[in-house]
Image (cartoon, rainbow over all chains, first blue to last red; front, side):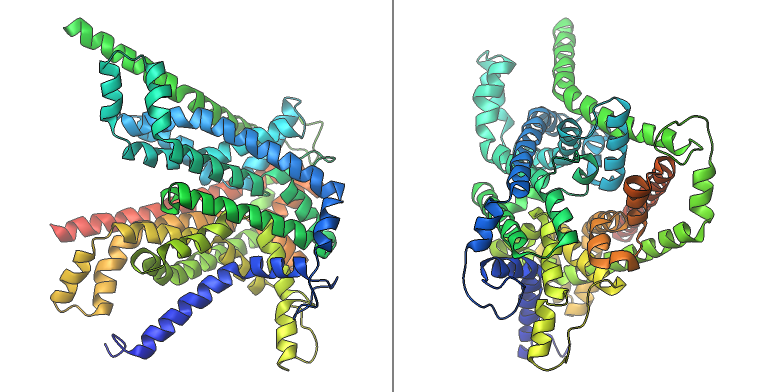
Length: 265
Length: 293
């Protein structure tokens, strides 16, 4: 092949990759740029630096209240997912029994169910049982969509953790309860942290499910942003979005440090 | 001794049951009860969210015969196929290079960040790029390619671009994870048998990576076919993707039985195509093992 080792081809290939990664990051870069720009309509090149939009975002109750709600919701959903997902992932990784494959497919199935279908179903269900719209329905929905990530990450954690340690503890007559709290959990702390953190951002950023389940007076942050994007293009929103980008970026870097990002895949 | 093993098996089974039951029970209830209830609602004859009684298939008949809804379903499926194939083509070289090349850690960061980021943030960024006062217009007018701002939003092409951009990380990661598992020795073996790069790529890498492409494509297809936030904000009224119609029926028109029927049709299409992608991956595995024999 003529292009096999041509320098031009290698250069074109490197350029393609640089452009691809640049385009992946472009929307975030533009938002961050606009959030510090002193001009009130988006313009390029920027006019001057300011933190005024951040101050205004902090002074807007709709954003601060929805931020608090999103953090509460993501914390609860993550806790619930870890609590129920950790034992399940352990069982799925450690035992080879007929039927477990079906269980695994069931627990991972929320990934392939469209969020709009799940959202509408949960909305109808909450109406049926009188829960109405609000935190309870949101929590049920966010729990099922974060659980697959927790289970996948933890199955890979357990597969790296030697079963011999548990057997040693058991042969020393440790009860199963003691084995869990003194051997298993301490050994998978990095996996638990990265699973938990990723569950948190998945819940924190969700809009497709939340939009059906929020009550009219208390939206989550992404739903609030969805409503604001529809009505205005104020740089305050860029400041709010930048905060979300900074938090998510810090979280992704933390997961990378703790366990390596490839474990999430 | 026999008694001991039985007792041991019993205790193991109970333990296993204790580990799995909470998660399985919770997921089964949270998924199945709402979906069963959705099926029931879709079979009420009324066009309202309340005062429901009786049975009727009228909403399904309307959804599948009215050209507004059926046409939208066909178009949405076509758009989703385009986005799925497009992202697979772009992702293959990127995923391959991320698995084999250098700077893997940084590449992972740039692939995972948009995935972890809220969808709304990504859309908002694209609005700032493509809007009337956006980055693209400023740049194009700056270099005098445009005299006045052009509206890049509110078109099908833009919606597909943003959908592809938003979901492409799933494809890259999925391809990357299968390529990581392909032994580089296989590629060297092919090269030593005088396979040129193109032959190696076509006969060795693509067949081995097919399960990853299928997995990535399944996720991208499902996300695209059911997307309503992106078409609503980027496409506006001009791009009536199916899930946007579902959203309108549920939240604005408040015709819950009809909206429920539409959403279940959408679910069937999404899961049907997911099956298709998996079957394609498996058919190829069988072919591979047949060739190996």
